[in-house]
Length: 247
Ligand SMILES: [Mn+2]
Image (tube, rainbow, N blue to C red):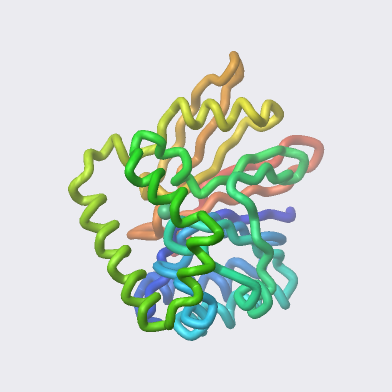
């Protein structure tokens, strides 16, 4: 039966030999080609500070993603909070299609909402303020016109800061906010499933929105388990949604 795969938060490293990179390359060559579609829903790359740098830093991933598209799997990419500066050179080099956050996607007649998840962490006011700043097109334009070395050092500084910041912050502040989830889900009444990443807290949760049961799937970060959601078409019934783990 045809199926689609969804994953997030791989955080590919600049070191091609990193075990996570190796696992992702294997996945792209062995498992992904069997899927009709692959949805990468944010933070696939540890850092993306311009296509010129990104295409040089992750050549193997770019090559394998492009090969996958050429073999016939549709690949979609949603921005994360680490990799949201992809521009036309990236889409051209890979053949990947951009996916808005959130996106309501029809999987074999089941409407499923995909989101990276950081916009749902509304208790973290400091982060949301920063997010608005970096999503501003003028700020992005200015940043992308800085020399390579400057962009790399700013990106590296932000990466370090974000690591320290998440170590010092209370756990619950950095998680998704249940009201933000309910508000998002209530905008899509035909949708019963939300799939997101970002928090690196894999799991499932059922909850009620306006009297209807909804289900939330949180993807992990491939550390240690390489975890994906698989949605398979079923004859005469709704698709099967399940976790899959790679060896
Ligand atoms: Mn994230």
